[in-house]
Amino acid sequence: MKTTIIFAHPWHGSFNKAIMDTTIKQLEIKKKDYQVIDLNKDAFDPVLRESDLALYSKGQTKDPLVVKYQRMLKDSDELVIIFPIWWYDVPAILKGFIDKVMLKNFAYIEGKTGLKGQLTSIKKTTVISTSEVPNWYLRFVAGNPIKGTFIRSTLKGVGLKNVKWINSSLTSTGKEHRRKNFLKKVATALG
Image (cartoon, rainbow, N blue to C red; front, side, top):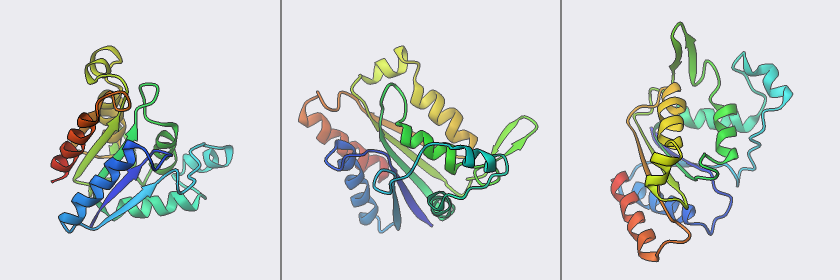
């Protein structure tokens, strides 16, 4: 089994890329097999089109990247999801990944009381985000969109448990030592 890193940032000069590099270094130190889903570099199309929706209720796709990503997720026992928080939410490309890859009969089945997640072979998920607003603002003013919606609803709905979230606040405007300390926090969280 492997760790799958899902990377959702378009610029490889970003702090998010430094987070991914730190993640990879930690996995290599632990001698853990890993694979990377780099949504932007793969030119993943996040838009659900009419042709996608025609197959959606059947849990099917014609998108070869979706099939590839599903195979990668099936071969995973750990996920690391890295992204910037934009407009108090995940980037569109990550939302599209959820919409197109987490299909019925792959990621969930519909039960009498809601979704029953199928990705139970994934034992640990680490969600790592960056933001410009302070953590307290995300939690108390913005309604905690990452933990409240993305983690407790979306990820739980596909069967992911043992999810840890860490966020680097004031990422662009903060001091360099804050970013260095955050990378140490990432290394510790993955250790």
